[in-house]
Amino acid sequence: MSYLIETPRLGLRHFCLDDLQDFFELGSDPEVIRYAEKHPLDNLDQARKVMLEAPLADYEKYGYGRFAVVWKLTGEVIGFCGMKFLPELGRNELGYRYKRKFWGQGIGTEAGAGTLEYAATCLGMDEAIALIMDGNIGSVRVAEKLGLRRNGTVQIYGVEALLYETALPASNLPFRSKLAP
Image 1 (cartoon, one colour):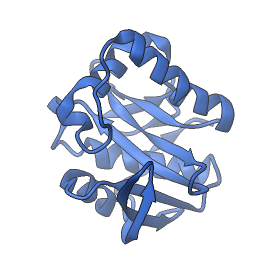
Image 2: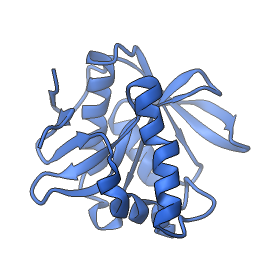
Image 3: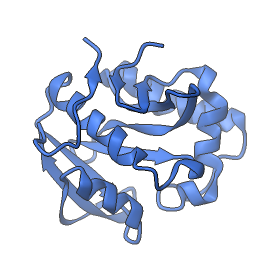
Image 4: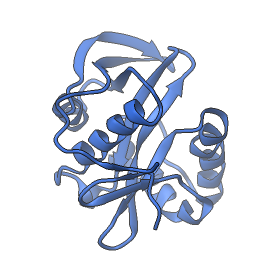
């Protein structure tokens, strides 16, 4: 398997339509999407539409987007992590989401560190932000472990989000990742 980013336990790569079932699971579990989406995905057709309009379209338009996070031990897609350009803010947001059975294992920090390194090294980004809904303690912890610091709030998509920021390259990442050439 060829990954864009490889960490000790994870491989990050572009999503493809073969990942549709996992993508659906990530978008249909009410607990997983509680702070991100108003409504869970209803079916695979809806998941396909979202996949085509979000990560796959972002790869085509910007050359990057949310990546599939693969548990290397089994090859299972367990979540997503990646940078997404937000035209509304003119900035790149680090975003992540994982299946519940993988919560609390440091996956978010591990994938996020690899993603920030990739953003700086391969994409030439000099900053990253994270937009986090108030009350999402898990995402705040991941962002802070990655060196992002709160800098107020922003209005986006009709809601107020906590704004976390960091300069890249981040010098405090927990380890170095293997990046695709």
